[in-house]
Length: 246
Image (cartoon, rainbow, N blue to C red; front, side, top):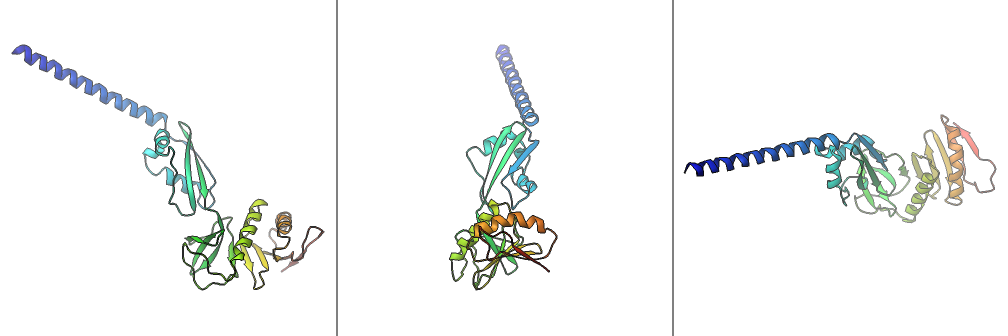
């Protein structure tokens, strides 16, 4: 009987030792991962509407997400969605201490102001987002006629061809790395681009590529000035344009 009790005692001690060893190993592995896979460097690309800090906060929102190994598992073959103005975000683990966040923003053509909000629309004229603030690189469009605006519905304008013009302008502005604050259309669909206190009167969309390409050279020279740049008749053969100070 004593031998049986001794046998159970030895068995229990072995179990306790094994459990203790497992616990120690688990703690050791946890500490190793925590110390050697902690994210200390984050690179963010593709963001315009949100700052780098805002993007980082979305991804690194708790203690575990500060660990690159955890991030590698969490975002493996998975993209982040459901964030306003963002189509998706992907996370790539570059090294145990470094990750790269790539932001894919929605393709927005412009925005209009409505009831104190900025309503952002895509190339088809569908209103996809609403915000209290403007977004860098997305011009405010004025001069359009509409009675109401509904989120996720097309802007109710008279002529939907205007959306193609707006998209064409915003793409050209991006191509030539020009940042316009506002695009205004008059009743005849003549367009004026606003750059701070400078207004560039472009007229119709005829020769719009040449007009905006030339703007890329002229606008930097007009920094700090106020007035109207007349480019209504500009074409490839035009040698100079008129600037009327105010």
